[in-house]
Image (cartoon, rainbow, N blue to C red; front, top):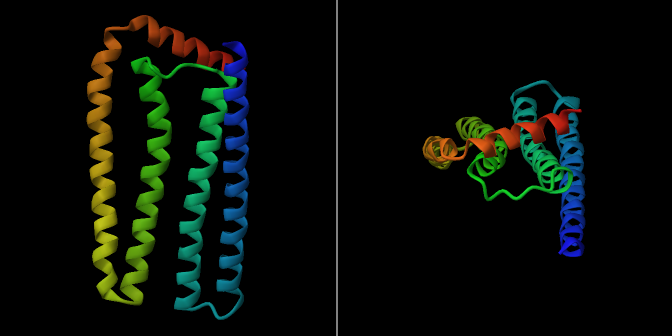
Length: 168
């Protein structure tokens, strides 16, 4: 079973590296978009380019956060996320980044629609409303999951000990 666990950890490591590499590529793409936008006239087009670069950077943050989460949870800690405390913490780390990235994308889409095509504003609004619904659903999950955690106080103590080990 230990061999199988090491194989899975190695696969998770490869996936984490690929997410980190994707994040770096996105950072370079965002930098190029921003540079292209501001190298010309500093006008409304430049502002749109910078706003687009911010959207790409938001995707880079998501990719990098996923890489970090995979590395910490699956490789360094090597924990099973079946316990309510671990599941909530794992999902919360991921959801924070996803919700923020989607909100940024929604704002980028709204700014773009306002300046280019007002008909596209409906899609931006749908994205922002969906992001709000996702945030509300996450809050409900945390609420119900917290009640389950109270049934397993030992799991919370174990999770906090793992966090202290990771910080060292």
